[in-house]
Length: 188
Image (tube, rainbow, N blue to C red; front, side, top):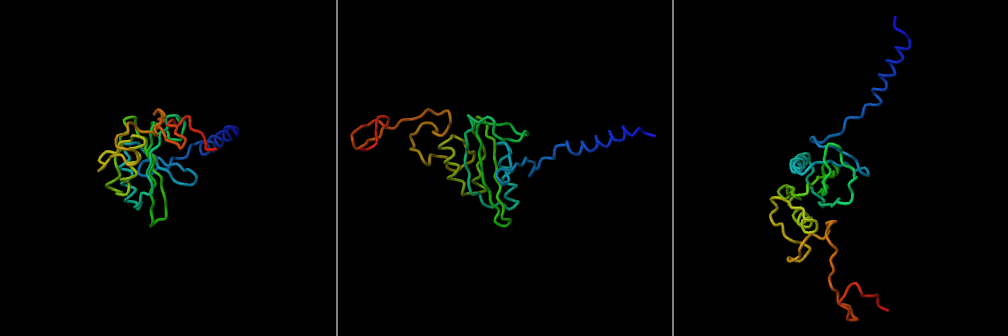
């Protein structure tokens, strides 16, 4: 006959296994899922981005509501699932399924080379959004039909929303005749 202490110890160990075991991470098409303010967010790297978004389109996410890029140069501690490597840039796409009345956010880690696949063939409405992300942050969308400046003049050098981009100064002509933006004061 077993000792009562051994039986209690075995029960405590089996209960602890159920409590201490981390829950299985939620996955969508093999990509980890998190929740931000109640919205489901699926994470991927640049290599898996187009494949994941293509699969989501087949799931009924037929509208890309928004697409933008983010420079995380100064925020190394943001939440990214441990299965992925944090990169400096992210491309974020918000997709909508009208039939299922659901939204999903896709966050893709973009490496320093700043290249990621274009979603233009899946969602033609992303054409201007991808141009804006390239224009302001320098993220290159491969296979984009017209990756040219959309907000800045054609001769502009650099990408002004990058965190490591130097602050520019453009002379502004005020009524008082000052040509320097740094010495201008409010009208009296």
